[in-house]
Amino acid sequence: MGTIEGSLASDAVQELPSDRVADLVEYIVCGLVDDEDSVSLDVTDGEEGALIEVSCSEEDAGRVIGRKGRTIKAIRTLARALGQRVGTAVEVEVVG
Image (cartoon, rainbow, N blue to C red; front, side, top):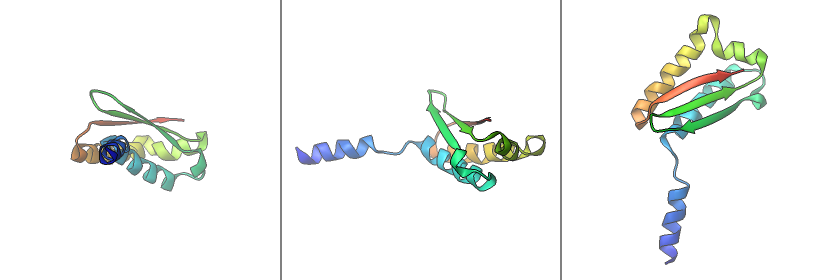
């Protein structure tokens, strides 16, 4: 019985596909901002895919979004590409 409980415990810790995408988004965003401690991600998994909401300080939100939204568009493109590879649809939003 010990092995069954052990395998159930490992299944509970199993990483979701959206977690891999969230790790990538966090890595990119932390590289862009001045205050890495203010960065937090809220991942919501649904039937249609995952929503990743990035929270950061007001000053850093501009850096994450970029001029004319180019930086966040690039982040979304990378997130969607990885999401497709791991089998989930992904949306990324910035919550300043």
